[in-house]
Length: 112
Image 1 (cartoon, rainbow, N blue to C red):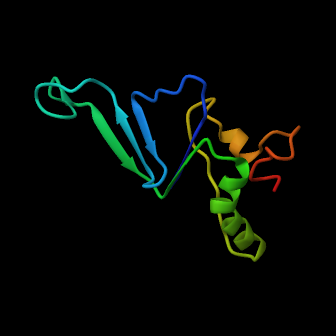
Image 2 (image 1 turned 90 degrees about the vertical axis):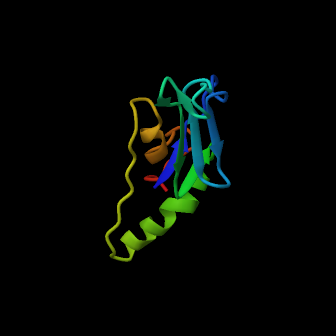
């Protein structure tokens, strides 16, 4: 499972820590409480997720080269394969798969 974060102008860098080297995303939803680190009102406020790869502010070419190229080649060779995108509305699923039709550099996985 790979995660591609959408670059935004107002990135919540105080609440979300993305570690591409270790392929983790840590989310802090609140302040440290008196119950210990990561607990506030007896509820967990820190979450850490581990993935196979994390893309943050990554080019279309890097996403294709690192994770889609082998699957596409396998399909061409006659082996079944699937590439799925999943996420919230407006999170960049179509951009990752189709890209920008006006820009060769920003083409997605399907046109490659």
